[in-house]
Image (cartoon, rainbow, N blue to C red; front, side):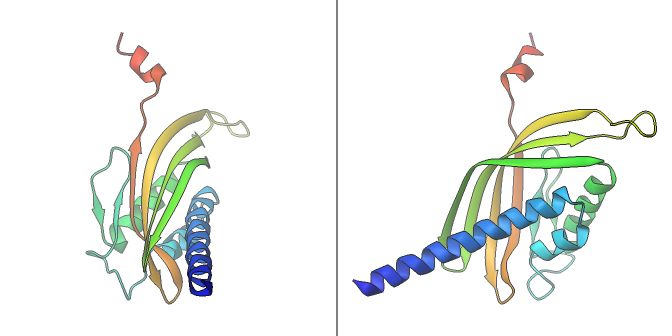
Length: 160
């Protein structure tokens, strides 16, 4: 019986570590910290500039390799004055050295202000995401991120 309890504790510790890695990734994006975003992904030992990691942003083509993925986040950060993620429906499953996190990204972002000293327009959006992590000696690292936009009822009304 105690073996089961120890196993359950280990699985829960893994799950909590994966959830922390997932949260750290979104906090790095909110802070515009490209170095921390890069650190969230698999490193050079597991991925190179041609493969090893995969990322799909809503509306973008599939990106493969550290160079394309890093460049995509750099472009997002350069063109976004403000971004905040309110994660809901967060679920994590750990299977050995692989973990799957699904969540809804409720995103609030702001563009550039028309006049200096003013706030730019704020826009809300919703994306469902699947984040796949792998266990490494440096902790849980992103292997794949896939985000798909969620159409809201307001989007449907535009078609009428």
